[in-house]
Image 1 (cartoon, rainbow, N blue to C red):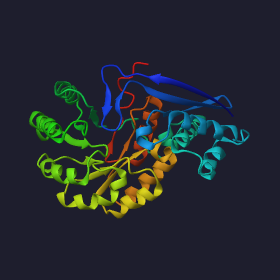
Image 2: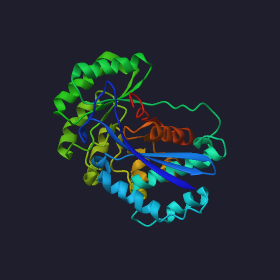
Image 3: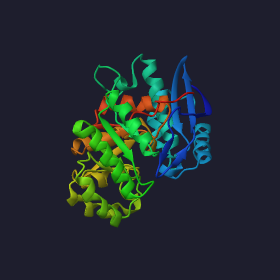
Image 4: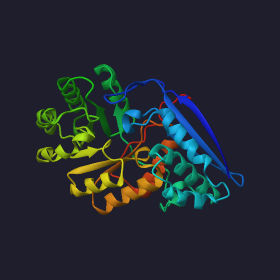
Length: 325
């Protein structure tokens, strides 16, 4: 087996990625891993410039991956190499693990002539799953025009990025969306951990009137212990940035349905650990989403393959949309 790494920028056409956590994003700094074994190729992909999510610098992830690849035993078969990922020491960062895990899954599935979803046990079916669409920060006119285009194309789940401006601005936009589309759409917001507990207490009564499907990450992960004070409002709370380990999944399950989970391959380290987390949540009857970090086509496709296996209540699979190169 041999490997090649490629790095490049992916650009969106017609939309600017802008959240309260990321600020404006001009390009996706992306790393691809190409594995080849006996003439069959597997591809892995990870976006590097998401330090605002996991805290790792771009070069930190790249150097970590190179260190792991340099010490690999390249005589091992791909299946053994995939199993050995669980034996790597704690120096293997989740983004590095993701690109290795994805490339090995892709390689093993291609060697059998089947999809990754089928290799993971999914039943036969179309390679498709329902997804939401996100309304990134911009002018109100841009937001409403974008929402209308999504609804015209048949999308019924919209998520508004909030926390960039003040709450009055966010609330007015949500009210405009609800007035325009009524209850024909599922409406949610993503705060990206920007509120204090006091701000959340002030906002939740107004948001309850809008019948939101969920509120994503209202508080910083550092304040997860305060989330229980918000349960009484009766609005589902979806955690994202908080879910980056098995221990975090255990804490989510302990909330007994008051908290939902947004699972991402880049936070947990690839398909295998995300599948394990999804299975735990499914057994505990905790609703969850499979999503991605505005990543390229390969990473988005991997999330789609996982959706076919675990059949989540929610999905966020728009990462490859609008990419022009």
